[in-house]
Amino acid sequence: MAGLAASFGSGAMTNPVSDISKAEVILIIGSNTTENHPVISHYVKRAVKFNGQKLIVADPRNLTIAQFAEKWIRPTPGTDVAWINGVIHVILKEGLQDQAFIDHRCDNYGALVKSVEPFTPEHVEMLTGIDGDDIVAVARLYAGAENASILYCMGITQHSHGTDNVKALANLAMVTGNLGRAGTGVNPLRGQNNVQGACDMGGLPNVFTGYQPVTDTAIVKRMETAWGVTGMSFQEGLTVTEMVPKAHDGELKCLYVVGENPLVSDPDLSHAEESFKNLEFLVVQDIFLTETAQLADVVFPAKAFAEKNGTFTNTERKVQRVRKAVNGPGNAKADWEIIAGVSTAMGYPMACISAEEIFQEISRVTPSYAGITYAGIDEEGLHWPCPIVGHPGTPVLHTKSFSRGKGLFHEIAFTPPAEGVDDTYPLVLTTGRVLYHYHTGTMTRKSDGLNDRSPECFVEISPEDASRYHLKDQSMADVYSRRGKIRVKVKISQTACEGTIFIPFHFAEAAVNRLTSAALDPVAKIPEYKVCAVAISPG
Image (cartoon, rainbow, N blue to C red; front, side, top):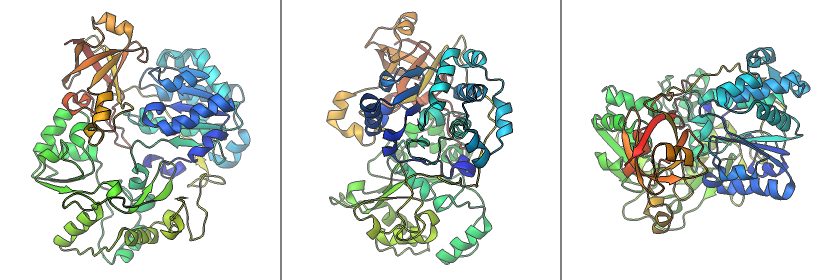
């Protein structure tokens, strides 16, 4: 996450996926790894089954990956800071911290010690529902490992305090010295293909490529020189979750959407629809006519990944070549060709010749990519940072120091979710994905085979809750929140835990984001998709 730039660079994986096999203990938190990252889950399952490595899983659902765990803990959704602070509390109380690492490589340790003092196992149990003895067991297991690795995903970040969750995990890794070596690290599993590359290329409103701040005068001047322009803005832009309310209020009048389908994926979807309809001009660039594209004034047909050349940067920061395999349909063009054409039509000519030429410019203006060339990644990719040509790349980050020099411990207070349950909305809804579909289903729901496997939206509910609300398996149910209602099929499952239901977000005809809250993390501006108060009744 960009909000952790001070101590963890871009928030990218600190270690390569192959390092999972070198970790004595693996902690998975906020990740349905077997369904959302099946290849990475294979590494984890092999590590447990064949190497005797220990797995800790923290998740509100009893996921498949939890069946491989030495210890599965089930926090009440939205309480991760509390239990992570509780684990650190036990580590410090029992003297399990890596004091040498703390003394030589970290700042603000005294503040950390003070901040976790209240988080006794008993207090954490009251806040999170996790048995206090399990907090102690997790602390001893993680801190007792020679090398321990943390894997996390959007179950941690998609909260109104998601940045705090990640900072708490960084505290846990630093206090035990589990950074800068093979088999350690804090490793976010990216939710979509080339998300890491998009962030690296400045797909965030506050940075240029390589996480260079747009507010830094020296960096702006260097970019002006590279691009032959003057007068560039030093002002940070808006995140998508900030744009939509401004469209609703009339402040933002035009939107250009590339490869995104916000009218299925945005929270509080009814409000988002009103916001988009209030725009004066909407442009969508995509490979299919998505729900968002159907509202657009102009639609640019884009080529898919196999129809163009370029690079992707994967979840472990490895920059890899992508080569054209087939021709694109009709008049579809590569994304860069469309953008260059629009720019030229607006009076700023972009005479790009090829994806390789664009990548050469990326290397010139991005220090972490400076040593990466097409020839250098012809057969095998390279992990950034790669500062000069001939550099072998950097699979493991922070081997000697952090981006700011010393790692910074953060004082993280526990903040409850933005929305709590009550008598009217007594259940917690959490959202996510299923194995057979991807994001808003733009591609996967056009596959007959995948639709046969997962044809419609459903609500996963525990047997106890199904009985309480008079629901039968495979029957229909209405699910309500303060923002809307959807109708879904009931799936009674032991994966669900009492008090929490799960609905995937792939299905536009029963879009779960009609229910979710638009409450945002104050730093990352990510919505709280993972905690929403709802009611359910037979449909």
